[in-house]
Image (tube, rainbow, N blue to C red; front, side, top):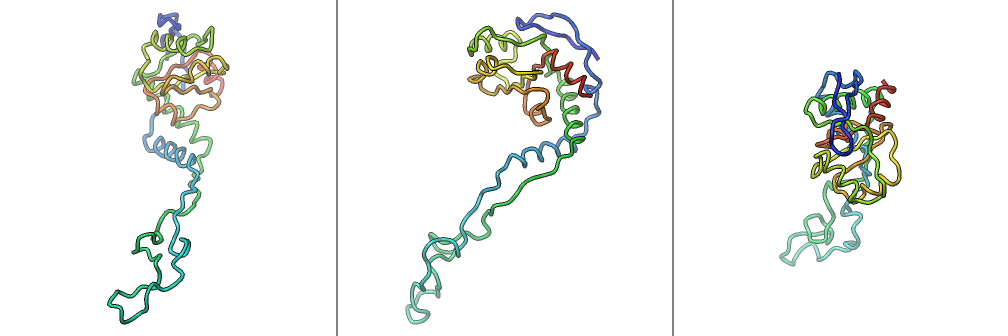
Length: 205
């Protein structure tokens, strides 16, 4: 499969042969499994509420059992009371889901295939800025007509100047091929990938 290569001025500069991974059969079930697993693995799981035994106070009986006309009460920290403990609240837990390497790689290939079919995948010869300034990066995105989109920029290696120039652009994520995953690809509405990154994907097949 061939696709057009653009330069940073947004003009066609040639063609590139895409690796076979861009023709992977897509499984929605596998993509869902990997994406939910990835998001689950980002969670810290440190959420916690206090039960009636953990909230401060409430050690004494607020009034005697009989004779006051009030309902029976043994503690001011009952879950029924204001400032009482929480019933069945969240407790610390581990959300880790195992994602085998084969599944991670296959889901990435599927996600790239899907984005290529949609026409959301753009290949550029290279991306570089003379100075680490936001306006330089914004101009490149405007030339490629991908501004105002959630954008994933895939590089073989990201240099410090490019990272700094991209820092203030909202919804722009830079990813190196070695760290690329299916979630990033599916999150982005547009993907800009360099020829060098394509070659690295070929080598990793």
